[in-house]
Image (cartoon, rainbow, N blue to C red; front, side, top):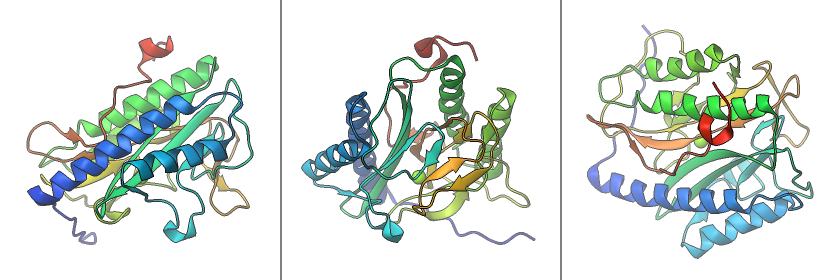
Length: 266
Ligand code: MG
């Protein structure tokens, strides 16, 4: 028997608070995505996000989490996740992944997007399109009664089917009052018994997809995760409420990496 996992089920009142946190996290993410331009430093992007979060009465969830030193995560090209804003200037051709968590009245919205800067390579465009679509493959499984393993497995099978790989050392997670709640939400089918999803569970689903190998390294700052072969990586994330009907994306935003938007065929 696999280990039992007690997954929090949110009440209606809690879901209402999560909707507010999700909406604000999404608003800030979209504004920060629009702020990404060649010449800006990643520290400027981080400060801009902090301002927008403060204006809305929230706090940046990641700041100080296990001593994380920045307001948001900004990860460029071969950086997968957890990059720290600094003096680096964004350049044309970069893939900039932004991951933003916002705490509002004690409840958390968590979301991420990868933004192409200027013209990017065809492979990078395919990588973005496949990663965003893999998130939606998973979201479509966020329904009452579906085994969590099916949701997780749908990411890897979609990604592998398009010639890319998923990162296995980092996973999505339940989210609520705490940034990382049960269950873990890997981007591959976990071994053993898998719990069934129930209405009221809230998951941060976040495919991290690499153009080359799925293995990753950590930089000396102790945070920034990079691909082992230093090829590109992409990251898309939503906070999603499991329901008995269609999944509810609490951090909803318009899609930005559809194949037709990027001019590629998947
Ligand atoms: Mg997350």
